[in-house]
Length: 330
Image 1 (tube, rainbow, N blue to C red):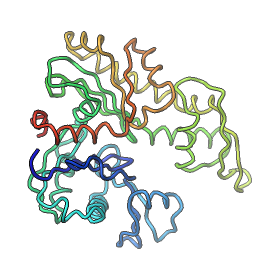
Image 2: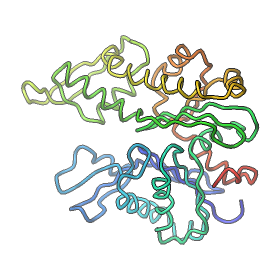
Image 3: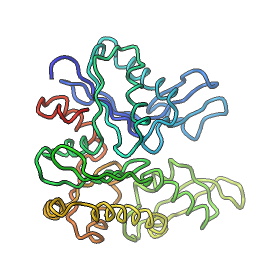
Image 4: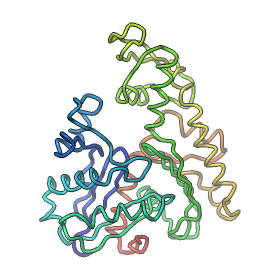
C-alpha cells in the first residue's frame, strides 16, 4: 500500500501498533496512571507496574473493558502519549489508519474507536475499520476470501469472540464476557472463599499462567498475600485441583457458546469446519490443555497459534501490506 499506513489493535489488556514497512512497533499494556485526576503520570508497561500498588492520589486503570472503550478521556490521553513517544508527527502524520474492532458491539461503541484516531493531532488521511475476527484469521495466514467456511475462537482478556467466516465476511459472530480477567477473578474468589486468603490480580494472573489447566493436575504454586483471619501478610500453597475447580465452569461456558454458533451455522459451512477444525487464538488460549478440552467436548480438530496475542495486529499488517486484502477493510 502506497504512503503511510498504521494498524492499531486496541486490546483490553494490551495495545499494539503496526506500521507498513516496519512491522509491529509497539506492544504495551493498555494501562494509564493519572495523578490527581488531571495529569498523565505513566502509560503502558510502566503504569502496569503501579497497578494495585498506587497511593490514593494516583488512579491506575484499564480504559478498555469488555472489548469497548470504557473511559474515552483516558484512552485518548494514552494513545496521544504513545504516538508522541513513537515520534508520531513525523512517522504517522497524514497516514491511513486501520483499526480492529469486535463485531458484536453497537455502532456507537465502534464509532468511539474511530473518533479516538480522528481526535488526535496527527491529521489522519483516512480511517478504516477491520472486524477483529477477520484480522484474527488473516493473522493466522488463513485465506478467508474463498467460499470455504472457517471457525475462529479468540479468547482475550475480557471477552471471547466466536466467529464463522466465509468469502471475506462474517457469517455468524458471538461475543461473550469470558476471558483472562474473568479467569483471574474466579481464582481470587476461590482462594478467598476456601482459604480465607486475599491475593491481587497480578498474583492471580501468575497462578493462571503457571498452574491453570483445563484438566486437574498435581501442580502447586506458593503465593503471597494477606491472611483474612490474622490480617497479616502470609504465604499459601495453591494446587492445580483448586484452580481447575475455579475455572472449569468458565471453560464450559466457552464450549457451550461455540456449540450455539455451530447449531446456527449453515450445513455447507459446517462441512468445511468439520474438515478444517476450529482455530483457537487470543492470549488466554495459552491455558494448558484448553485446546484438548475443546476437542474432546466438540469432536473438532483444534488448531493452535504460536503467538496467539499477536494474530489481530498481524492480520491488520496483512491488510496494510497486501493490496488484494485491502477490500476487507471498511
